[in-house]
Length: 409
Image (cartoon, rainbow, N blue to C red; front, side, top):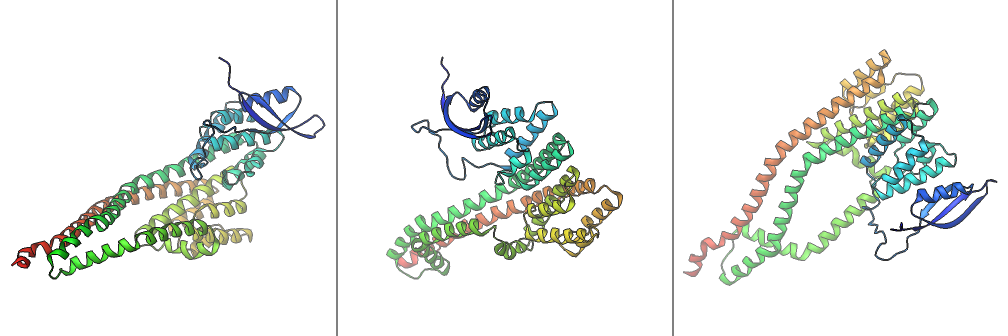
């Protein structure tokens, strides 16, 4: 059976270093690159030409091209394993470009491979895709390239991202049940107000008489929802759009993110997650040999909270002036005293990276315990609330029926 061919556009450099462009048909990108090298040309970019029809790749914005942190963690682990096994960087990138399941990530890896093949460093090739590769990864890879220990750095990157993915997974798993119950409660209430209550309202009008106060409230909510359902839905979507558009703006973050830490129950959880992420990332970067001032810049932004980011900037200024790392952290309440003391001990003993890892592991366990406790508390509360709301609505609907005989008499 003949192998199906695809059409590719390519950009190459010839022996004199001049750029050339053209098209070629081949089974895969690797085959195109092989043919071009046989012709004495250095591939710079190879892109498949989509021809349309039923076989056209369907890209759904936000889904098809989404690259998750888990994908980057797997990529780092596989790349570290292959390089440590003796495979060349180019060979490793070619294998990853062919076997990566995420098509968007596979395409980016192919571009990285082409950049590396043309003489660009791996960190610089990663840096051309900041939306895919976090600054932490780019800087750690750069440090590994300079120090000659790229495989161990990629191993550290993989472990760091795997721990982050594991932490996120635990939180999502713990919060799935309460969120599902909450959504079911909202859907049930809206369904009753839109479809069931109007049936009873018509029956009450035929019976005549005065409705009890709870029933009047329920009928009023039903009438309001019938009129305002569409505007409410539109307002929700507009709010989601504005949130997505503004959540990364500094002015918005300055006002909103400090409030997250003050939430009654979830504030402590958010604080522990931010501290864990800060210490884990800082420890990984210091171990990789990234300069401490540069590390503080990156881990502050990667912490996910503007309060931690401001604290990291204060620490950076303190270190720049020759002072200790732990002292300015004590001035920020977001860092518990235990974290400050352990970091001070790590500075004194010269084992700051190990101490930061221990802090991150401790807070990972704290986050897991907190999420488990929240789940144990929220589950019965959500069930009680759901039962109370639905039960209260049913009682309010049937209260007028209890006086039907009096109305008939």
